[in-house]
Image (tube, rainbow, N blue to C red; front, top):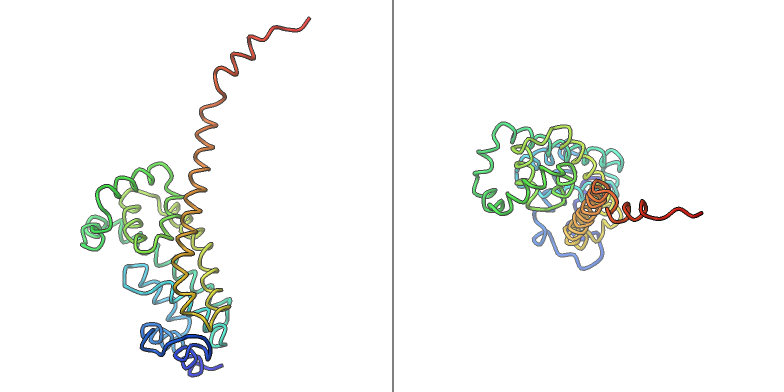
Length: 239
């Protein structure tokens, strides 16, 4: 199916289901036209800009990439690869910018409103103890990702640690979201509403894994209970 046909199906809701005209998803229809016209270049450019804080609907770009692959406008694997690279690249560009201009970025009203003193203190404590897993969880906290990544840069999280954590975290979510756009192209409005819920569940799962992992490490460092070891030494030998 060509670009014009895909755009028309988007506006009509794929020909089925309770889809409203373009007026209900005007930003989605505009985004579809841009991606259908400029393809992989538009995907990469929009996601790189979104990583730097430009208000680009990241999840919608991913869903639209999968939708266009299902309609034959794009190839699925290249679309997935470009989407993944755009998201990780955009996050890393933000991180590098924050290493040089972190204080100025943290002082911006939108960031300061989200990153209250109490939240900042908690995040700084997490970055100090387990930066890798904190970055992984922050990637899936929609709306809070940018302040968390800026704080990671100002808190001296090493670039390779940030890049590895963000790349691994994105590897868990990007294929899922793009595949949802591909598999449920005709019900994309419903999927779009559920993406945020899925990312929240993923963030909670990562946080739980993080708590269990560090709980096990702490338990190993403490060693066996003193009473148990003493009790073993005091046991009399059998004749």
